[in-house]
Image 1 (cartoon, each protein chain N blue to C red):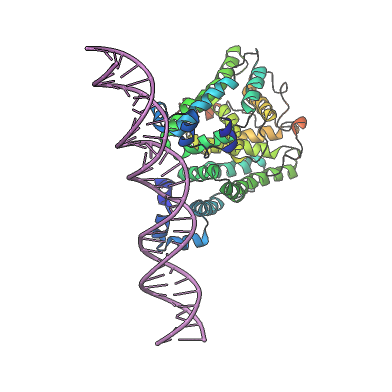
Image 2 (image 1 turned 60 degrees about the vertical axis):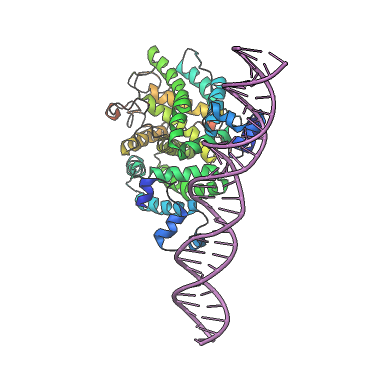
Length: 195
Length: 195
DNA sequence: CCCTTAACTAGACGCAACGTCTCGATATTA
DNA sequence: TAATATCGAGACGTTGCGTCTAGTTAAGGG
């Protein structure tokens, strides 16, 4: 796993997986259907472990905790990039990838927003799918293109954006969270360029 | 090109490209360094052709035109997915892909926002990179995962979101564009599910 | 008009890793 | 001890990229 994160997905071969486990390739194929399947299982486990579902009492706080954990990369880029590449090339694996990883992650985000709806913080007809697409879209886009920093600070900024968009129209909140994308304190040095 | 869009990126072989052009493979390699390079050039040309830089006099209108064109897919998914997969697997191609395609597209978006800054519609210290990441992040995320509709309507909704976020704080505009993500009219039937 | 040179088409070849298949060895049960 | 199942090791078939070779056609100078 450590080797995977450093040397990249392509450097991981079934030969190597089997050798490292001290078994034959056939035995690996007994439990997993493909190389991608092995890595997918490892990543779902890791993600479940690293990203907990918070319950801090407010949308603001929940998102802050959840997105900080989600955006805190620990050298997972190479693995995620490999999985996505596999999903793009193999439609059958794409189904597995969506259902066992992507949608599971989105479900957590969704549950946070649904609790906010239950509390009355957010309107019930809010398009949670679009909000999830924005958060995970930016996350994946930066993972893949690697053109701008990807850290907890980005997670916090997107969290504020989500709160702002989700609570617009329910009364309060136009100005309470209202720092907008322009946040002075979020303007990190020199991130404007293109790589 | 039509065949590419229908049969997918993997179905396109160098053998086939050469045969279709009535030349030998070696001749194809004389002008392009790889299969991905051939497709990249085709796509940059197509994108330049289909997505013009509007100048409608206001950020609102500019974005509407630009994003409608950008989000109007014409069976390009298979090609874009193939290019992205290639970029994820091959770091050398990733550089080409970013510089010749991705950043070129972003530059158009950026120029629209910069004109809005010049007009005084948007604060000069707005983080245009993050706004671009949101728009293109959602675009790519839906292209790749294919879990929700990807059409001009989505482009318009993101356009309104960008206007709202970019003009927050400059006076006006909190309420002018202010429909928010919840837009009733944008709640298309049954798009809530996961695929 | 012929010969040299350049560029071209066709296709064989090497390569790499996946996933399958075979074989001999080991462990388990009667 | 003998029969059966499982396993490690690795050979094999497969695919398509990118390179390399060989024989052919077109261009230009003497």
